[in-house]
Image 1 (tube, rainbow, N blue to C red):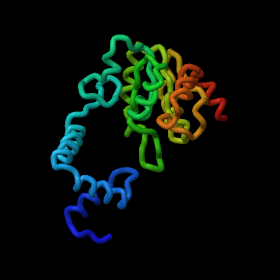
Image 2 (cartoon, rainbow, N blue to C red):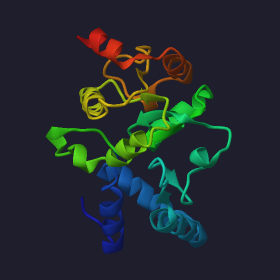
Image 3 (tube, rainbow, N blue to C red):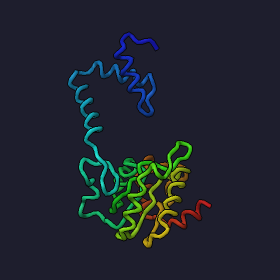
Image 4 (tube, one colour):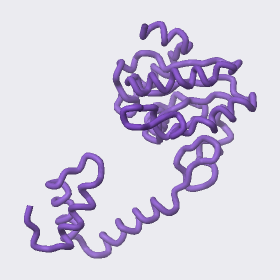
Length: 207
């Protein structure tokens, strides 16, 4: 593709580096920004800088937050002894949208995926192990996607948390095998949380 401006070419190159955006879409977005008022583009640029510089990770659960504790962990009405283990912020948002879960979360920041070079040490697992060791958790829910990576991660955690004396649950199979939580409709996801099953039973169902 030939560009009449090196600045346009550079913008297209950077935008197309984002997930799911090809060169044609990147060009359309770049041209849109070029037509916008300069203030609008500056606001966009500043919001992206703020996102990178000011967003933190909750020291308790690993969720994205503007402060040391995310709003969920800091909320006095949340059930602190009930912890749902999820892959990332998108799953937290999906579950929160159901309005059916009153516990807190633990965000792994990914899933074990040897094909992608992601192992247990690359995830936020030690924080979870330490939290469990404190003995304040009554139930852990594996709220991971039913993909191969999700199942592998859940089974690894099941083995790692073998000494956990509380209840280990998994979301019910209202979520089809191979599906990701963020794409499940709210009603299905809500039912899957409410009707969660013991993790050992979910392993038998997949056998």
